[in-house]
Image: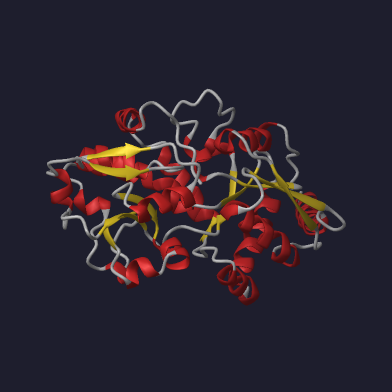
Length: 343
């Protein structure tokens, strides 16, 4: 019996070594297709192009990575292909639209996948060193959020590609109109500078990169920080949306709306990829994020780099299952029944 058990132990040990060797050798000579849920150019594509350049050296076997842009339906074309059609062996990865993760829980009929089935490798951006701001022109008399709640005349707030203004209006009882129809951020920001709208929402880092004079000249007044659990040090006098919430229901709505931003540029593997390969990819991703050259190139390209690991993103995704239906219903009500598209 002892001989049988010893022989079995040898067999299992050998099988384990063979499994490890298989994982380590799998990518040798392989090509990984990195699907991006947007057109070329922009933040998601920029993240993918840097992963293409830097991540292969940290994957055993040194595969090549080819970026494949697959825009459409706010990222759902890519997410559906990724989850249902793409190979499930680790040769396909995806930089997905951050809103794709919440589409299934919002009841989108176009989302043909379960978020929890995707295997998350990590995210390059998480707003941990940034903030999403609601800003208005400083020439306006509104000094506080309470002034915005009690405004005699509604403020005109521009909106394009984000759900933030609509959520703040609903959750905090702010008195403003949502002005839509802009083709993109640049057109909306020009309207803001001309005084055609009173405010809009954007990332703090984007203002510093594209419109540093807005702060330097005192042109804008930041009113609210979004996607923050606490105030950014550089904006210590600007309250977070969470601390402004007046009820638990309001806070829960804000927290749900902030979830996609906490995993702003998520990298994932499809369902069914062997766990040892997923773990290998997670390690390679973490090493890429720590690479000094990758950090320098991200800074040069003005791409936010505040990474989270696959395990951290997985925890964010797990929290989606705990969101009450009433919160989801209120979220959709705030957006007028339209699903978010993201940017």
